[in-house]
Image 1 (tube, one colour):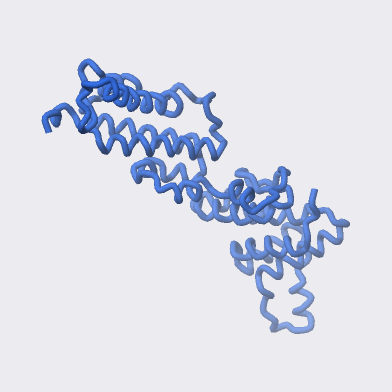
Image 2: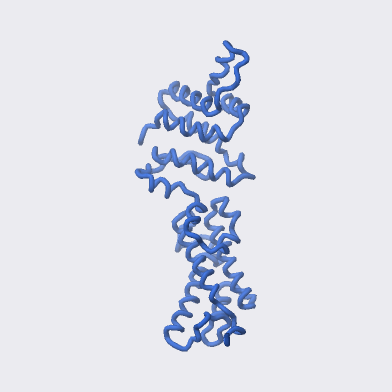
Amino acid sequence: MKKITEATIEQIAKVLGRELTGSEITSMLENLSLYDFDNDRRVSNPNLTNTTKWRRINESIIAKIHDVYGNHAPLWNVIQYVANPARYIKQPGQWRNLRQSINEILIFNSYELGDDGLINQVSAANTMTEALERTQSLSNRLTPLKLDRRVMMFCREELLREDYFHAIFEASKGLMSRIQSLSGLQLDGTPLIEKSFSLRAPILFLRNNRLQTADERDMYFAISALLKTIVYMYRNPQAHHPKLYDEKNIDDAVSAFVMISKAHRILDNVMDVRGWDE
């Protein structure tokens, strides 16, 4: 395990300093039994204003670590104090950004701040690419992919909470809602897809696809299969513990959103039977 240097502690102190006011730092140092060096400075200069916020945090952490012979517990205590999820219950986006900023530093030292606001030991990142992949939020991972806007429309709140399972679930519900709107059916899930994309009596069909050739029928079947896959994996209301993907894995979440986005773009070329002669 890599030793956490004073330079690393300084980086973290700068991140934490942006989250607290001067008076909040004073309270934190008192609550965590950390020495407040500004009190000494005021003895010689009573009119002295507080030191820069991050410097106060930094020097108090380093001094305490020296007192306990290099144990990093004082650093973890400060991070967990500031990053207590209860402080951000109405600001989930700010919490997500704080956690990401801290983890971008800690991940190289075999630690990370978990979603519960506690420090966990993990394997260290060895490259910048690995560090970014492991610390970026789901929203940050999805932005460069230019997904269909309708994917995100139904799950913004869940994305802010980094709730992969329910974000995917709501996105898949949004997809089913769109098929209901296109078809005029009030069914859901697999029955909705089978009724809408029936080879015998189609309600929805692809533009320029008359289902006359084997290739056209295969393409039509592929659309139905894609939509059913989304239902089986992500939409099924009974699937509280999905087996085909890891609900806590960000890579699996990205794959799910890409699949749902592809389905939306296919539906852009779908019409109901009233447009059959167009």
